[in-house]
Image (cartoon, rainbow, N blue to C red; front, side, top):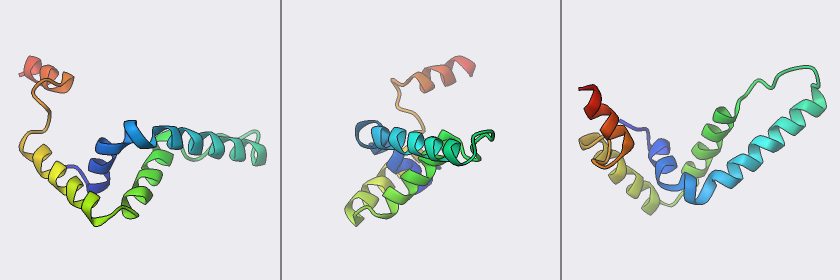
Length: 94
């Protein structure tokens, strides 16, 4: 089952937060390289995105958190929408 912040990610990331995560990632890389030009950053984009989404979820309204819980429960009952690529892949592997 998805964690609450993962449900929030699924519901909001593409429409609302992706440009902000891209911006946060670029700022993180730029700052890291300016301070450590010969070292690889300890965090990758995925880690930056997870931190960002958890923070945004924690600051959300109770109404949105309830919506995320409903989504989590629905995903628990039906992990993938019937018309999704993931569902087709899962059916092909069965």
